[in-house]
Image 1 (cartoon, rainbow, N blue to C red):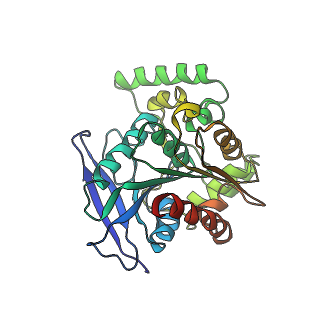
Image 2: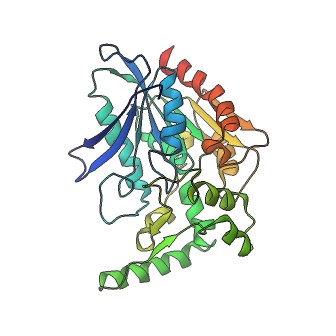
Length: 314
């Protein structure tokens, strides 16, 4: 261990529950000094102990940043009932609660707070920054617009039909019926291949989440079907041409998959109002290689670290 990690709970009057988070401190941390801080947001179905914390959070802490990796409400070690909800509005509100916490810490410079998000966390980071002006710089790592994904791949390209099914299921549960929980990934890569699934994102996601490579106790890939309507009705990039003005770094791999990070990255780079924006397309790199594979993450960090140093330190 080359840096210290402290696990904390954030209690804010704006929520009825705590947000669980890990703070990654620089190796030579001195609580008497002031540090730039970075909020690190996990992917959809992930948790703070996975890529947002143990890869990007740890790496940025080693470079002198205080990094806080948090679990989304209703997920991981954070509170909120019922469980297994992926609510974009609440995910964005979580960022505000974490910023509220950071600005109270005597060793955090409230004017030097950035955000980094991976996969769905990248889309949520972008969405949060549009209206949370305390965020001064944004890095999206293989970021996905979960609203678009919910209307397309996760909704069978039939958003209205999906909403009708959600409505029926919610009514059934309100009347005492059994909750429907969907695991969005196959149980194994072998099972996926036997089912004829060839999409690189599904196969690599299964390899990451369903094997020791990326498994974590709170890293679940299941969602409560009756609470998915909010995602179908949401767009991470809404008004980005007007409101997303902070410095922006978009990192994607050039191997497109069904989850759409390559497409979403190109779109937000073009749409963002940011005067200082950068698109990094890593060759021969897939979505899930940017989660934890040393070669891909090292190449990403070669740009991420100078980006945050320029906009939060210089």
